[in-house]
Length: 403
Image 1: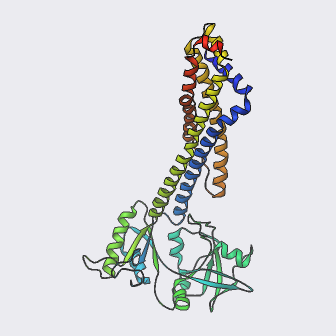
Image 2: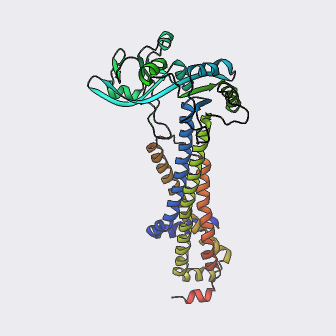
């Protein structure tokens, strides 16, 4: 019985192939859109997590001032850090594995006839450790270079390509303002961040050289604090805040004139944003499924009208209402099912294309694919039931008289 209904439904669909395809186009678009949006959203979330992880596992950033201005706590009026603050964090806070001081400025760098405006950061080897940046070519700073403030530098891959192409820049000389700096190495490729910024567009020099020869002061703009394995960043954050309040002589009840930022907060915020956007876009795309269901119901009603005499003959020769109902319901489900299959294939293709364009990982979720296809089948049942019920309840005599 069911196989016969499937066979008749296939014959009807193939007999009106173009009309059948146009009927399920809404379902195809709806399923494809939902799958593509979810796949791209999941890929974006994975990329955000990976990018934040690339900044350093369990990393806290300590800055002078507060993110939002308050009485005596704005970033412009807060007392800057010093190298001793970083050393104290590393020595006195047990939960901190390494504390790396850093200061940065945008400077136009000159190499021969070429120049480029880039971020010059003063730091030491602790910066590479905290940020988990490997040296791809050459070496990091010697301790003697860091202590004495020798004018040597480590290049990011973008700066290397802009000033030296694919060649080896080791031993070459750059000019940072009036400072001649010898290149000692090149950092590994970091790629673009979740914010779209180029993480390889930088030059690293010893922080003492930066302070004396570029900044002209002993200030430290921020401190990267890498938390020990097995220690929560919340616990380490509390330890850092207590020490910094003590060092900066902040009394009870007074507001901090510094802030400790957890890199996991970035991942949480961005993941939340991508999740909301993915849900919103998927919801909008799901409306296409409802539109497709209405299209199926419309065509099935037309089909019932066109096949009134056929229905009358079937009822007259002994077909039951249940058999007629099943025939038309199976036809509606098959229409939406075919639309769902095409939509799944198209959605995977669009998801892969979108993930490639965003440089995000593409990882199809079988659960989402099954849910999208299952929902398309439910659409066929829901919107196909009324036309099928109308066909099943026809009076055979009236149906046979229909012209």
